[in-house]
Image (cartoon, rainbow, N blue to C red; front, side):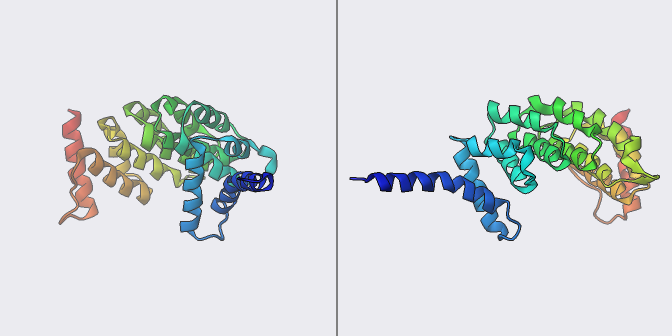
Length: 236
């Protein structure tokens, strides 16, 4: 028969488990494989009990961004109404890294009903948040996301002192990931972009949308010309 002390010990172990996993998953000094194992245990536990994860994700005062980030990504993997609502709330967190995590976690849910919230974050003041929104739209965005991505690509706040910001490449990558031919006009402009990363991303995006590429036996300039001809034919 289980004694009272044994029962207490088992309860204590059960309560400590998720807390220990959260600490392990958020510890950069722990090997990646061990962090991922802890993360997966948190996801499995979250399907029946989200208490600790929710508390950690919402804990603005803790200042523990790493633990909050892990907890938020767990919410995205677990999904469900409670998790989705909390992610929407966290998309307005004062800390940019937390907003970015919440947006990426929305993509993990696979819930297209969150698309409007994610699209709205493409105008966030923080570049890291805009990048998180783009990553999420790769998972849940449909053709309707192409126009706001195109606007974000050309927006003034996508440049700093005349120089292209790194997030612009993510917008192009996302258009390729979505795979809609609505992106062709934006990608045509991207082929001639002064930012080489955007131009190269445009080549890749064309290939994803078309389902083939022009890379074999062609230089990048030749590939660009081939894609121009192909896209213009599609837009006629």
